[in-house]
Image 1 (tube, helix red, strand yellow):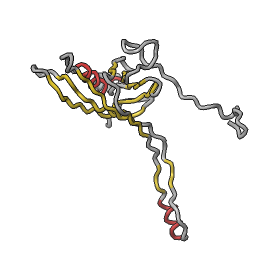
Image 2 (cartoon, helix red, strand yellow):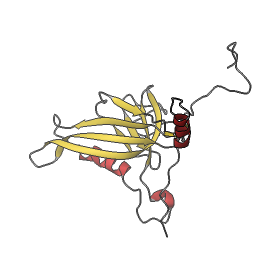
Image 3 (tube, one colour):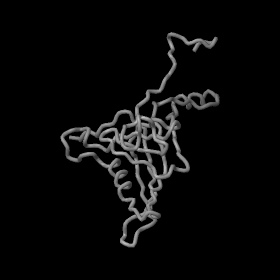
Length: 191
């Protein structure tokens, strides 16, 4: 935009790329679900929250480092101030808590937790294909608020809090930490 509010030919407006949410049994016509959903971009495995989380935290770190030589020369010259240098962009991170509850219906929540575990696990260990020797690349969507957060699962914590008389888990809380990523790969083996 120019100072008078007109679009400049040299500076087109920034538009975030839209990635459609994978079509599967939880979505319709590529519309993000009303409940939080995490889906694999690799094989379509999807976990939809039984209850929406009470909060969703998205963090963005902006990395800066102190430039020591500049700060020392300013101190010697009697000047005040700290010189910082931008060191590069980092992706956002997200944290959310998902509750799965099968107590009222006496249904195990093991399948939902297993699907999350699958998304956090290596696709096919020992494969000759690099794209299969890493965990799933995912997308998180939740209505209009969060239409497409492309990411990987950084950590997954599961706490089982209710069991059937036969020991099946009926209630579980999963804390999922995700790291934004557009491109992912497996680390190269060191020789």
